[in-house]
Every structure is written in structure tokens, then in C-alpha cells.
Image 1 (cartoon, rainbow, N blue to C red):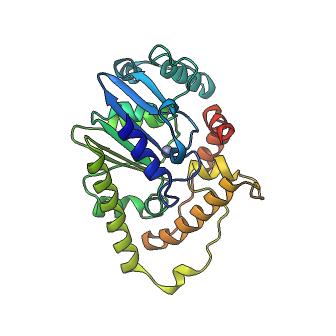
Image 2: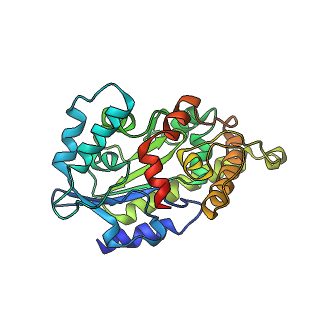
Length: 278
Ligand SMILES: [Zn+2]
């Protein structure tokens, strides 16, 4: 557990990797998943901010049938995740991405929203470039978060996969030691930086127009209105969006989130919960 807290804070305090309440980490031990609580910041996380859940119960969830209506389905899905908590954890709410952590068999999972990685995942040619640069990583097309994303990943995750690139969202790494996670993250950043340096032209430095969100964090902390909220988190995420926009120039240009997904997230209870924790 000390290891988990240590590496969570290490990555959480690096603003180019994750900001505000974004990203999450987990560890598995004796059939129990310890995953970050929803909305808590990785930078300052403590042992008690992790939620303990029964992995076997979580892995039953993808086999179930859920109601068709968005609200009913997300509520039932959340209910089943909450019901997987270990005794004594009743008051806690685990990360919205809990099931993804459980689906990886590896001991540790690190999920971040690095600006440079999202320069790839939020770009027009992101998928093609990802397949070329990271042939072993699994690319997950943009989809609704929560139940839909969990089911997508449950279908795509085959044996031996240890990296997921989520379009307009971020990256998941899974490994049995924190050292391996660290090496995987550093390798990915190095490959992307080399690619960006190779493609660079002065035109990339022009301030790009930002009128649509790139990732769920931009919706949660910057809002969808014309004015940026007067908060530190909004400013941090705005800087992140500007960096992403520049990086996308190396991969065919910006690809903001689809309207339908923006609309879904703007009305999703799980994200308004996360916003309130900030
Ligand atoms: Zn995420």
C-alpha cells in the first residue's frame, strides 16, 4: 500500500501528466482491488483515499444485462460497483474508472491524462500514428465513459495487453511492479517527443483556437460555457488543452470530443460528483 501511495503522489504532482482530480491508480492484493476514490487528487492522496473492492464481484459486472436508458443504466452500473466494496468501505466512492482497473490481471495499474499522450489521442491521425508508434498498445475509440467504456475495454482486453490508449481521454498502463510502469510511461513519452520534434515546424507555435473540449477533464474543470471558471483547476486544464492542441499538429491536427459525448458527460452524475470533490 505504501508503494501505491508513493507512486500515485509521484505522478500526481507532475502537472504534465495529470491535473486536478484526473487520473487514477490501483493495486491488487489477495483478491482485493485498492483503487483511488472518485475526485481525490493523486498529488496529495493518502491510504484512506483508496477504496477496497472485491475483484471477483467486480468481474461479474460485465456479464450482466443493464437497462437501456442512460440514467437507469449508469445508476445500476454504479450501484453494482458500490456493492462490490469490501466491508468497512461503505462511505467511500471509488473512481469512475474502477472496472477498467479490475479488468487488468496485473498487480498495478496507472491511468494518466498526460498532455503529450493526449496530443496523440486527440488528433485526427491519432489511431494510425498510435498503431505505428505503439503496435502493442490497444487503441480504444472515443466512447461514452462509465458502463460503455468499461464494456469496450472488457471486449478489447486480451491476454498480455498492458497498455490502453483511450481516444480523447488518456492512457492506462498495467504491470506487476511500479518500476515497470515507470519504464512504460517514460518510453511512451520519449517516442512521442521524438515524433513531435521530428515533425515540428514554426507554424505549430501559433496559438491554436480552442473552442471545444478535448477530454472529459476539460468539461469537468473548464466547463462548456464561453467563460473559463475562475479556479486554479480551470487554469491548469486550459494550459493542458493549449499544449494538447500544439502536439496534435504532429498528428494531423485537432480532433475535439464528439458533441454527443460532450453532452453525455455534461449531464453525467458521476462527473458532477467528481467536480464537487475538487
Ligand atoms: Zn481518465
